[in-house]
Length: 225
Image (cartoon, rainbow, N blue to C red; front, side, top):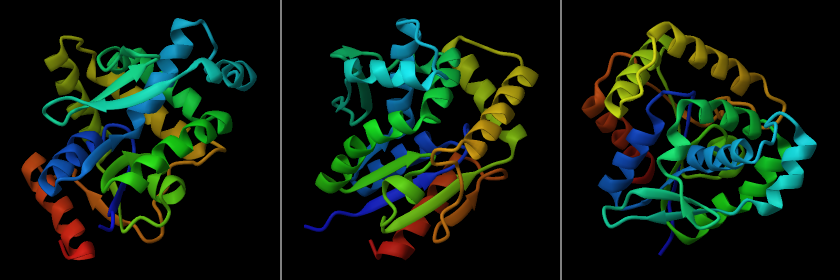
């Protein structure tokens, strides 16, 4: 049976993970959150005192980093780091900065590239990240660039942090999102950009259900599912 690859890219806080997970569940596909993989690498560097912006130091540490994806009974993705479940630890706000820094390093991107492609070779996937349609899966059957305004993304992020019991002031969250946008779009290695053949989906004025239906509509139009 032919596998189908759906690539969803977009800036931080655009709702990629939530919508990609929902789309994968609706389609019966495997969901792959590549941002979680980079967060796992970032967590390792933090825990081992490695400066995430020091390319040589990070590259030297990479052979000791073994990120693995597994799935719980509900189909939720879990991240393992050297055998330990770190799915909650990688969501701490400070890990976002580590993930952004290590993801800008060519050595890290090369190290994780084959892991991501192998998942897409073996399964029909919905994969989200920053460079899925441009670098990881350039031949994906469906490419979507998911975005929303920075203020809307900050509002959503604040609600998410409150629900987790780790609230942050709105202006601080907004500043972090704007900083992350700049870093992601200006990095030398695989900068965030919309693939030429990607469909733009702006969810600024859409709620979750409307966003989900819009995403699935694009998938069905492109694949005939």
